[in-house]
Image (cartoon, rainbow, N blue to C red; front, side, top):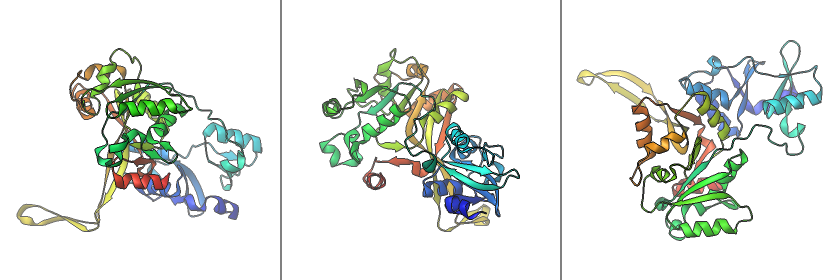
Length: 355
């Protein structure tokens, strides 16, 4: 491997035998969505968070090696191209690192986004303009005593509130119309938002009594006629939600849940037993992986009719209802560290240290 290449990407190189889970962990650790795959010193391909997400959606085990999901037909630059042609390719592929190959397929250099684009480049990806429902009516009891004073959506994260961070992310991909379910300290939230220099397009609707995690959406019947996002008010997700929308549309889902890949490693040897207590298997420090609900969804508009009006109704009830009639409830996975939760004090303290 050339020294110039090693200096640029030496920290984000993996071999073909590493598992999908290890790739996810390295991406989180290095704060990147792309790694370079090598066999010895020979460049094989790049692997992206999108490759991992598609593999999970297709049922590939996170313990499997990445060799089975490597796309060897990705678009790369060549040493015969001009600097401007390579920059155009980076923009087209939205790639922070662009491999530059010679005529034999050897990696001879890597173009870096921060070196190629000194000034901020406008997002050329197509925007989407879907309604967004923010569930902001809860009391935030797990964050007491701070929520005795202010509602959870106004808890600060850096120089903004969690509510602003969430809405800014949606505005960044083109979503501008917000519906906000409110109850606890609703007047304080309305007052705070009115004082901001940036004015959000928000229509508030009052949840007069607790209606569960989705019950209040029944109050919007007849107002929303397109697919829409639903988001809680206690987590931040680094995922570009346009990817979730593409998945929702391409898979003809009725509902899509944004899930977080969570892994638990048992630090002991685990023994499985059968009849008469005889050992049937021994697993040394096994790892279990789950997809955890992050509280962000895309729903088709007809699902509003499935939410009973004025009745306590959780999003899980809606999932079960859709599945029971043969509907499609899809799950779009994100990595563990790309999702930051502030629902409880330990998680909130971790969040504000990261941001």
